[in-house]
Image (cartoon, rainbow, N blue to C red; front, side, top):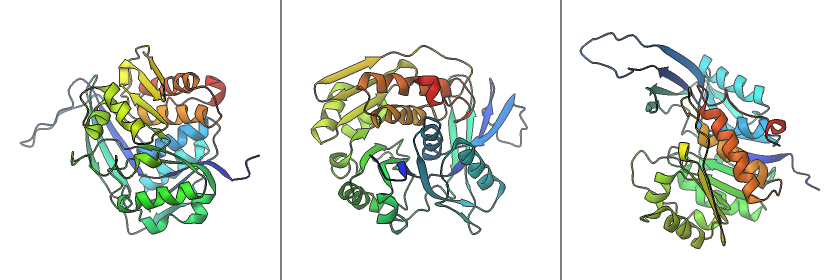
Length: 306
């Protein structure tokens, strides 16, 4: 019987997304005013989107982070509370501005401008043993954006392991494109690794995805789930290799689809379901979000995937 208060703990890269959509959203300098078709202001941040999907899937989920004492910070708290995420460990800091991502989304693509603000302010000392011990599982996303926390992540993973937690990791993209610090330090302690195809190739240095997955498993990863967006996903674990396509979806911006995939996969994995079923749940969650605007509008609940 599990007596811990949380199934999942994650570290917040807390920010909002201003999503500009339309056929032509490319800015033109020289004081040119260009009209766009639409915009959406929504909660952003990979870990906060992940947390909302995890909570909607019935996992008792807590998030650690900071927001500014501003309307964007309140939007973050409102969205997470609506989803059922425990936000008691989110501090409202009047000295900070809540992070902001401006996503310019023409059909089938997007470019993002990011103001970090509260995204990267967590420090290793913010992660106490008491907090870690309160959860069954630790999910770390946005590894490369969490610059304040990143130097302490190997030690945090070691402490989490010593306290009996399983660990999942989704690095997301490295803005500096150095792709360092993951293989040697973190992968040996990672139970489930969630890169997308391009991240997997960069991190591993391999020439193809099967070789990348073999490299991750050789480093000690128990399960590697490679996300390929509209092409579907692959799962590798020991001698198991699963590959599934995804039914195409249109009308969305794909923001947060990978994060909801992570939460869906873990919702099955933490319940002890077969890997094939975990993959199906993850893909259903990712596809549903990809078909909507913003990272949380399409998120599914457990009764919709079970």
